[in-house]
Image (cartoon, rainbow, N blue to C red; front, side, top):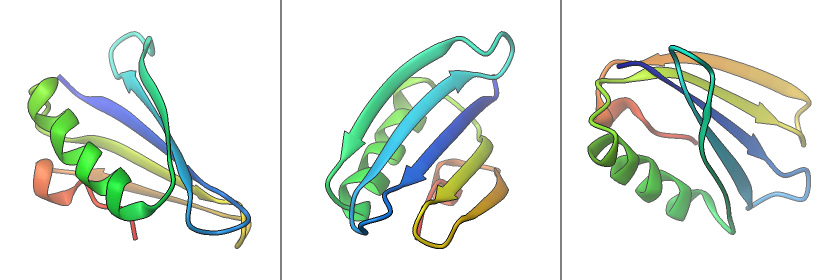
Length: 82
């Protein structure tokens, strides 16, 4: 099963929000906010185990830089946001 991980990094820096969608029907599975990227990255690792995902599409919207990055995560080790 593939998933879509949408991460929005705050314009003020430090914090981020995560929305996790089911890749087959785009149903929202989880939505959460984090005060720092360390905590977000830890949570991403737990989601890979919880939903038994082999990876998926990672979308990172950085509001401070006004940019969007897309990447394919092949396994739980590639679910990382910098």
